[in-house]
Image (cartoon, rainbow over all chains, first blue to last red; front, side, top):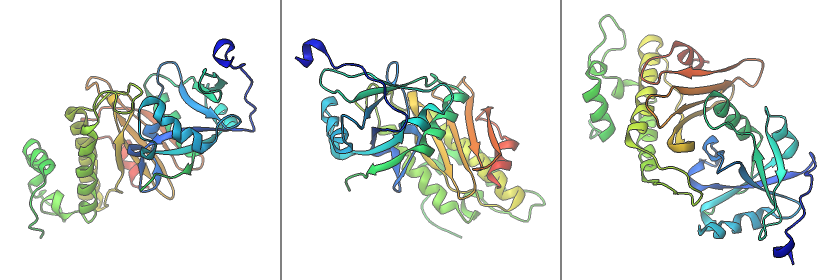
Length: 132
Length: 162
């Protein structure tokens, strides 16, 4: 029924968290690097904690035919994302992922993008470390 | 003085920048930059590991991210060494060793995270585009702008001296 009707779009409260996978290449000496933050298409995909755990977010790497062991998972407070320039966090559920959401508003390139990436890095926390 | 084998990056940099290997007239810090700076070993190691970025080809993340070119990485390393050399020869300061990593759209990130400041310099894949930077001292002082990665930038060098 979900495939036919789709999941309802909901408002993500400021007080909640979103999760995002971070590939091995973006973790150095246990620290997250700003290169992890990039748009794919219109937005930067994240998972809303209400409908997906950090571990589920990690395992979803298989959906893009990637090995979950090559990913860490980070969390970011929604309110702190929304405080960065014009960034928006919106629930954009997909048939196979009710938690799917997007961070919209990342510039395509330029000084502002560089700034935003560093500011996002500073509000992110690694909640699942890389598998060694 | 170290007699270790010259790294491939060193050979290329020395070939393109022979002046770096000449003792600076009147300088109290004579000799080859790449072998004299105290943080040189760590910096060379970071540069060496950055070569692995070139192994990331188009769609390396399964989400359509672009791969990385040797030209982009070369420009990033040249930028880094230019400023490292200036700090050493002009001020006797060793450049804090950054992390060189994959940025968006085939760009290269050079990221410093220090106790009292942070700086991100992004070298774009397009050599005709300006590099961009953003820095923060965790207080009131922030810097942001664009620069020509092929040239020395005094503002960046000053920030790196913090």
